[in-house]
Amino acid sequence: MQKIYTKVTDKMNFFQGIDPTELAEKYGTPLYVYNERILRQRCRDLKNLVKYPNFVVDYSAKANSNLAFLEIVKSEGLEVDAMSPGEIYIEKLAGFEPKEIFYICNNVSAEEMQYAINEGVVISVDSLSQLEQYGKLNPGGEIAVRFNPGVGAGHHEKVVTAGKKTKFAVDPEFIPQVKEILNKYNLKLIGINQHIGSLFMDGTAFVESIGKLLEIAKQFDDLKFIDMGGGFGIPYNKEDDQPSLDLNDLGSKIDEALFKFAEEYGKQVTFRIEPGRYISAECSVILGTVHAVKYNHTHKFIGTDIGFNVLQRPIMYDSYHGVEVFRKGDKKSENTENVTVVGNICESGDILAKDRVLPEIFEGDTLCVLDAGAYGFSMASNYNNRLRPAEILIRENNDVVLIRERDELKDIKRHMISLKKY
Image 1 (spheres, rainbow, N blue to C red):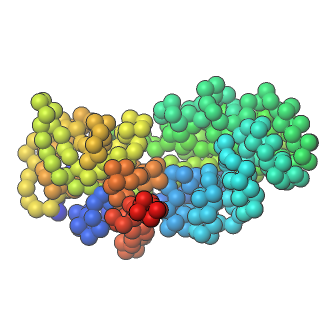
Image 2: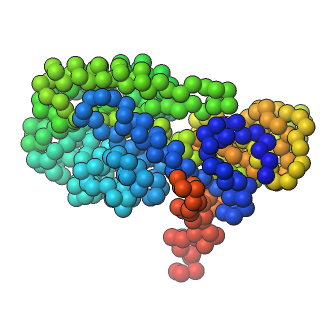
Image 3: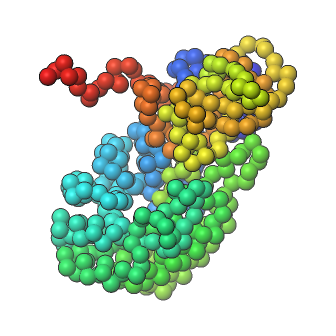
């Protein structure tokens, strides 16, 4: 096996001496590969973010909800948040107790909210109407409310979740109405939460939002917790040595705000964060196979089996993912070229990497797409009736285990009903 272009995975020791071309042959491509050591380290990074004593990290399972993945997160002492009954279900299978699950709902039905109530998890609502719905379903219950601090941040407008143009959370001007509904149904407000957006690499907006959230908190007595949200970014341009988020600097600024608030509030409430991407993104890559190399006029295209059914982020957010190249055999790449790496979906937008300068790539090469652990498999689909890929895990002891089987053709017709039945 030749390492044609492997700067990032070499530096991370991602494959731990295991040949990725052999993984591709054994398990087939496309293939999600996870590294347990990196996942555990990212959990520990955030557990040690601050010195404030009552601090909880809630992993955001929407980024990656594989059962084995969640079991590792649980073993590292993290708690978890959920956005749906399905996430609550899989989190409980992974070993999380109801009190360790924070269900942050958005525009959900009474049936879905009742499911969460029955499961005994902590619930947050993000509108007056949803708070009213909760009150009708569970009068006298405990509830959290998500507020909009007026500060948003993120790598794309579609992932900015606070500020003046978002669908999320309660505007602080409606705090009197929140209190009216709480009183109407004898509800106890045990927490407030926020989320300003996803993938910030500078903590300035996050720290600003914490200040605004704490001003909101002061308007409520006897809160048990305050959830500061997530959005912690990772450097996707690692080939160009993009720096990581400075957690030491961010943590010290957060600590200053938390200790000051606790002193003013009169008790050390629990503070929570809810990162997903930071924990999951860097511990996974996708392996794919090059099946075609072609020119269209002056453009050279590298055709792979990693379509946007496998990884949606590039087509949805114009997101950047690094690409590496491995090769069986001794054929050499004599040149570097400007190429566009594409998938096998019948749409012109099925572009994985546009105008990248890479060593010459040949049919049969194994490509490695970096930083795929967040919103990778969790957003995968059967579009074009393609099969969702397998997921494997490289354990700390170098064992490789299958943690999700590849779809089979029979899975495509599951739940479909032929008219022949009628």
